Amino acid sequence: MPSSVFKQTKKFPGRWVLGACFTLLTFSSGLGFYGLAVYLQAFSRERQWSVSSISLATTFFFLVGGVAGIPISKFIAKHDVRIMVLGGATLATVALFSMRFVEHRWQLFVVYIFYALGWSASGMGPVTTVVTRWFHVRRASALAIASTGLSMGGIVVTPFIKWILDSQGIRNGSPWLALIWFLGTVPVTLFLLRAFPQPYGWLPDGARAKPGEFADISGTPLNDAVKTKFFRAVTFGYIFALGAQVGGALQLVKLVEERTNRSTAILATVVLSSMSIISRFIAGRIIPRVDMTRFTVGLATLQGLSMASIALNESRIGLLLSIAVFGITIGNMVMMQSLLLAERFGVRDYPRIAARSGLISFSGTALGPLLLGWLYDVAGGYRAAYLAAAICSLLGAAMFSFAGPASVDELTS
Image (cartoon, rainbow, N blue to C red; front, top):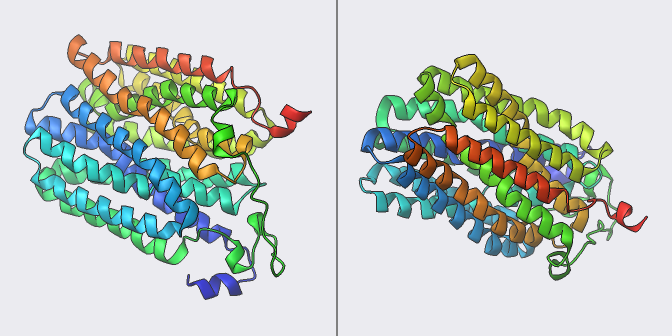
């Protein structure tokens, strides 16, 4: 949809932008977040590398992505977000193609540097920034729709790339992964993604802008936000909650395949993502009516219980039921970090505040896979690893409980 069409349309074009965000997250998660679990299993099977060594590369991936979020947020605060997304998509495409040349473990680290940079530049950070700019009143519902792409990637994209790597191997399958990423991200960015609604005659949520009228972009400056108890409690809570979640999700394919078979491992990914979609739409309706902080505490607690259940279950049905409960939390937990920060600190410095929080919490995201992979190698199985993830989730819930309300109205009333 060219810019002229954005200006001429009688209906709020936010739905097109939201569709673009949904699509970007679909491929970002399917080939990135969930895809890392598939790559772990593929490299472990084909190269006979230890799980802990590949998990270290995954840890490195998330650390690079977290650090990259700071300069990325500064760039998109001043420039057209499409420039960053297109650059990131191109870089990720090259990195996926380059996986076919990986023969030594150090080469995987090099590839993951470029893949993490591309993934970070074309994924969650830029997408949530765009959504918060286009939607204020309906932000929870809009983020729920956009972030459903995270789960859709696990349902549609990840099983497909697993089939490609299982049937063709890393060397022959990697070019196909690169092509899928490029086609899934570049066209939709060019035609449907837009940074702000105002240049096209609209205000956030669908109101028509009068000539010279601009939307409210008030909020807390970055330097003030990072000094608040709310920022610290949410950020450090996410170190544990996301570390447990990412570690658990990325080891899940291998766990299920070891305890059952390959077909069940694929089904587990679908169950996880399907429950994430269903629960996210329900949450999108509930969140505006409840205390966001308490809702996040409940999610982290439920995640801890599901992790413990996965650790202790050996049967096919028991595992799938536990994974379904885990799926309830997996998408909403990521969405809540953006919602909490946007609700408490506003739009003004949201990209930089989210990037700063993300940089700190990404340390947990990075260390989670490493911790679970190390515990797997030490204990010879996943029971101790997932029990550790359960404990980390509950620690995250405890930290969230100290944040206080997210709503500024509640703070001043």
